[in-house]
Structure formats: structure tokens, C-alpha cells
Length: 219
Image (cartoon, rainbow, N blue to C red; front, side, top):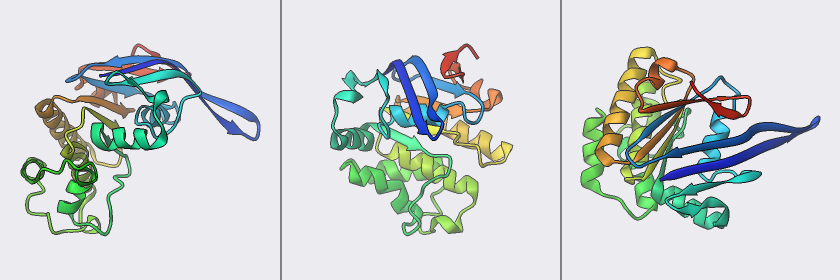
């Protein structure tokens, strides 16, 4: 499903290039879950953005479903992201002017893959069935994160990328959100890659790696 080979990424600073990723390799099959551990600033978000086609690597290759991202134009990467990749951001990134029901359907509608039955099932499984008419500002942090997870899964993606999806939640709510996310991922059969600093949460996924000094090492 996903292969990352020798990926290098640096950012320009007044002091010169700042290397963040120094040759990252990983592979993830359909139906597998992988925890990407690392301290804040270790490059976890950078790697997820590269995999999601939101940024481009300096060197190396990222292949998704047999397609090398480097061969795709911007519009093609955007289409791949809409149709094949669900992204759960740490800050939720919900549409403030849309209700819960419409936020859940947003990405699927854009991708032309909206299934109202699946949307309603997601809402029910995520405890959102009675909140469909509310707006994000009327929800708790845990409820907003559930909407973000549902939105990512509504398109029935082949890969879900989750960037510290429980980072803004208390422990009990975070545990429940991750349990629901893994349950729904298992139901859809997609691959799941989660960036986290929590070894406790990482232990619940199939595999674990740690990003340190720009490379992946054993956790």
C-alpha cells in the first residue's frame, strides 16, 4: 500500500538548510497499523505531510498503491489525497460553517464518493448520531476529534494518516477516540499510520517505529 524509500527533507533557515529527514524508509500494507513515535520537532508531521502529498521530498521516493508521488502533478496529488487518503489533523481542521453531518460528508462529496448510509453508520459508531445539526464550536474537543476521524473515513480511503490525533484530549477521551479509530480502520481494511509521542498508545497498533535524528529506529 505504502512504501517510503530514502526520503530526505530539509527546510531553509537564515543559518542555512535545516535537515529534518535524513533517509527514511518504511512500508505499510493494507489492513496494517503503524505508530510513528518521536519527540516534538522530530519530523513526524513533516513525514506525514510528505506521504499525504502536501509537500515534496528533496530526495527519495514515496509510492502509494504502486504510484510514485514524484511523478504526479499538483492536481493529481490533490485527487489522490481526496480519494485515497484520509488525514486526521491534530487541530481537527473542521469547517466552522458546516454542521457535523456536513463536515462528515465534506471530503467524500468532493471526491464524488459520498455514501449517506456509510456516513450515518460512522456517525452512529462515533457517538455523533444526535449531533448532526450542531456546528464545531458547539462540540467538545473529543466530539470534534470524532468528527475529524469520521470525515477521514467517510471517503473509504486506502490509507489514514493521523497526526497526534489524541494530543489535545484527556487520557480517557483519547483512549476512546483511538479505540474507535482502530475499530473503524479494521472495518474498512485500510492502512493506518499514526504519529504520536505516547508509547502507551503506540503499543495498541500492529507495529511501531521511532523517528530520531532524522531516521527511523527501533522503538
